Length: 313
Ligand SMILES: [Zn+2]
Image 1 (cartoon, rainbow, N blue to C red):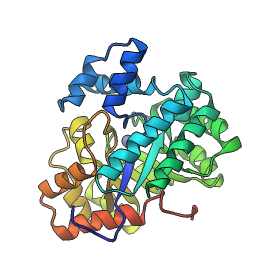
Image 2: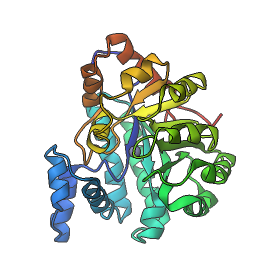
Image 3: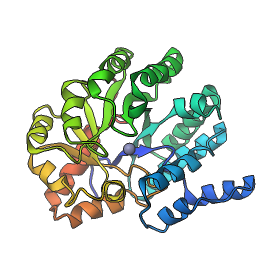
């Protein structure tokens, strides 16, 4: 990528999906575990069914059972970002899944691992923040449980709250959870229009009140106009989209930009679907975007990044 004064930010990546494959191999060997075929297949750059992707994601997540492992996971994000010329990342993480659902690490150790990693990354010139990821299909009671877990002692590096997973629960049902998170100073995002219909994007904005969309791939022209009008940022991850939403073709990123949507690029799960910021900008170039559009992606990526923002608006 050409030199630019605008910070290059990975606008969407998951802690559990961004592990360094070499570290995962070492940990598996140390623990006497075999590697699932789905993970080897993904690392080889080949597609697997969605179930296989989840299996691979959960395999890595199970290794995050100590402060040191969480620190290593965060540093994998930092190293990958820096190697691609980036200086910031908005990192989705799922403390409720690891601490309560799996019961594999105390919350305090999880936060300290993230804090250690963020502090070290800062010495390399990188800025990062954490966005809590709740599981859409587990519904708003789960969302409230996530907030019950984290709100009593929320670290300052947690800047947002988001839904992920399968888009099965209507966003209007999530609105009370989002309201509570917002009242606690968090910004609100949602994975929408990825594995669910494009109408989810509209509902997330109008009925859930979310201020940022992850993917938004299936949004129709009217919804893109809504996103543009409201200046709602959209995080787009071409490699991940190709692997997990292959039916959405051609990729709508050029159409979104023409509509005036504030799109930016992210890597999503680069420890599973091999990619980095460089491959994502290359993918955008391959979609026919010109230098101006690529510069716009970078500019949006910095301007709307939560890791570079000082406080919730
Ligand atoms: Zn994601």
